[in-house]
Image 1: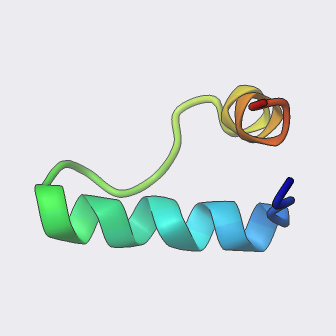
Image 2: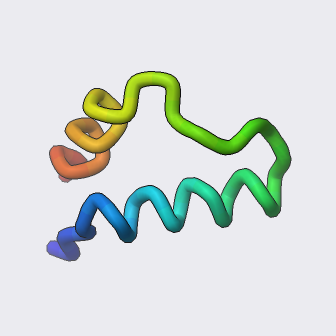
Image 3: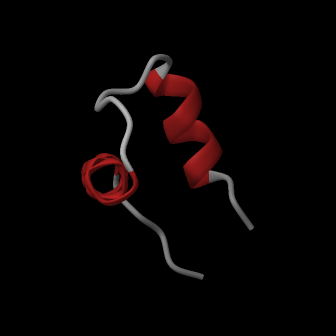
Length: 40
């Protein structure tokens, strides 16, 4: 299983927004980080 750091998750999020559009930033950062870290 690959584990990403918070910094890596935020970097991927920003890259996806640049590619697919939307506004940068995370409304509920703690929740998003927890969701990403708990993916199985």
